[in-house]
Image (cartoon, rainbow over all chains, first blue to last red; front, side):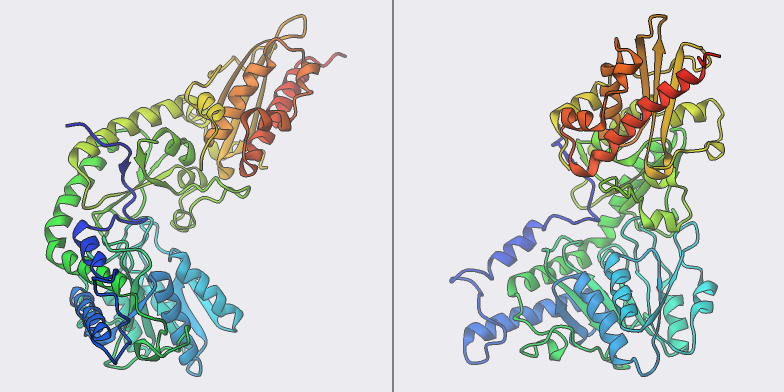
Length: 406
Length: 128
């Protein structure tokens, strides 16, 4: 069997839409299909569209153990995070103006918190432990009398670690603090049961789980009832929380994608775990290779590895037959390495040397074997070119060198 | 980001990779950049008695443009005098490799590497 190149190993950036999902979406577009406006109350076109939207709402709710009435459609996890964090902070600001989150959150959370800081809120950004996980005691210690909201992501997008949402949520509940969780990277990967989880608001995205881009949802708990200030005003859709005509085809796609995730995630995750372990076993015997993020408390879909003394962008260039992403962003004059890896306490070399491999539904063992051979060749070639590797081999401590920073 | 064919050529077939003996009085070594910035360039030149650079070697930790810039520089300096080499500007390197604006710093680093190698060589030959 011949491999189709390039090999896609960037499933945490986005996933392809599953063929079965695409088929359902296509049925909601053209004149022959279910194209009506779900808000049209006066004719069958609207009623049919509304029915499709409500079916999808049930499918999304079912995957995460929620009541369909707790699901609000949005344009994606970024909007869900904005609505949850700004919406709750603004609604409950009389209770307090302090927010706790993590420094390794997605930018959609960090930047939203920054925006609230400009509105007079105070935000604490907690660093994780070196394995990427939040220390429960540090979290507890950061809470104050005026803390109104905490936001912690379920699964980290760069290093795949799974935070202890049960414990963190319980602490919030004991202290009367609203708890928001960004679960964009979690659906279909970890079991989510909002009936038992102490979580008030949870953000979802369709396109990380084989659904389309441009659609997401926010879970807003009803018991006890959580309120959010609308960020998008208009026709009062979604019970006033998010106005805008519902995109039937997108919503139907998200529903079907989440339904399939529920059916298939147990088998799929086992298969993906074997692929991930196969890759890690293949890379581990190289010198100076480091795993970023805890290995145990991590989704099987992610392997984030630093190849010491090799710069990430040049490595990606050598790996042009595989689609991966690097923690090194050498695309601006600032040359900032990944803020997530920096927050783990990784030094600059390791942060600049990282590659994120993320696997999914269509990854095969043959692809993994090809990737192992390719990575070994590429790292070997770049180390032959690397003055840092030569110095390491000569026993020079790179920390003792006076670098000419530019 | 898309790289130009010239960058890809130097990256895939880097010229003059390697090391010269840095204790050799005829060798000048320039190492510039820092791991924190994501690029470290080491350029070495071997100067003969006529003051001509007869050999040059490099090793670079950095992105493809940084590797290409240093590889190109080793080709350019060979056979030239120190004074001629001092005339090489980062602009020349960036133009030759058609570097995009975000990669101009790679060519700056290469120019710095030339200057550092020359300075190291000259520090070994201070005439009293």
